[in-house]
Length: 478
Image 1: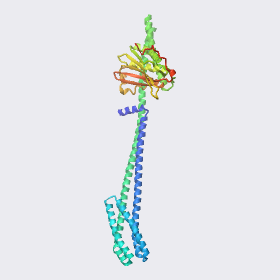
Image 2: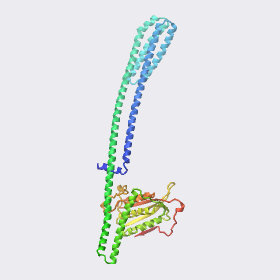
Image 3: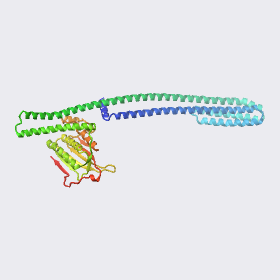
């Protein structure tokens, strides 16, 4: 159950679309199977019907032609008109030809040894009858009607009776074969019905399971969000409580007259200034995140020189770097192009990344900013990449996919007692995307992390900045 909940929790982050896609695919496959079974049963029924109709028609024609052969022979026996006798003789031979063709076709379509043996016997009996009939016709044409009648009674009648019995046997075997095919079709129909019932039952169970899974994933998602929000409230409370406690203590000491000399007053003023600035930055970050959450914040993109952006970022992070005892090293390429960005947004984004590098930078106490360009192709204008690197605790590969989620904080970070709100990276990504850029990460546990901001280049020759030959490509802040 725990494994299922983890899977459902992962699926809930994709808005249950994956589960609905799986259900649709399952229903589509099942529907195709039902349609295939129905088409197969329909084709089999049509084939059996056609085979039965064609078989009965062939047997009926064979019996009719055999009777026609016998009937025209009798007509020749009962008339004294020589012209009619010749005509009837021709008719009986024509009917005989059709009977021979029918027997040959029956022998060719014989499905088993029993039918093949019956076809051979029918052919022998028919040949025997024709031998007698030819003698009868010869006597008739010679004018010996009495002799012809005697020959027919002696040999023709019993020979034709054997042929008639053979034809009845053919009809019986055909009926048995049709009955077997009908039974097979009925069994196939029952199997198809059973499969359809099973498939529909499976579809119902799959749909019910999918509905349950979607509801449970949504519940797990809401529970997870509630947990993250509670952790966020606890983190914010801690982040606010600490500076408030310091401010209250300093204010009480000043109010109680414990701060008497100028040096102490300056020291307490610096503490109050630092803690109030930390509280203000925290509140600003929360408000900024809320504005990006409901999309109330609208950015105005304008062409900006990368050098100006880096000047503002260095100025904003100088105090943080100095107070934390870190060193910030800037490495830039010469002749950087102009990017389309929002200066407050990109400054806030990079300030969050630098702040994270300081917070999780470990004992190395070094942060590196690398600015480089990537040439575009036929359809891409290119981009500027601003990478913020540290040599800190790093991020496990299993957590990379979640670090940009609002309120998410790694269990290792909790275990290390590193405080935070879980909003910094989520806000940085939203700011990057609002400017048409993106934010990527490469990290390795115990080695460090590199977060790279990708910004699109401005278009047009008039937007290229003037090259400052005196600007260093490498500098550091301590």
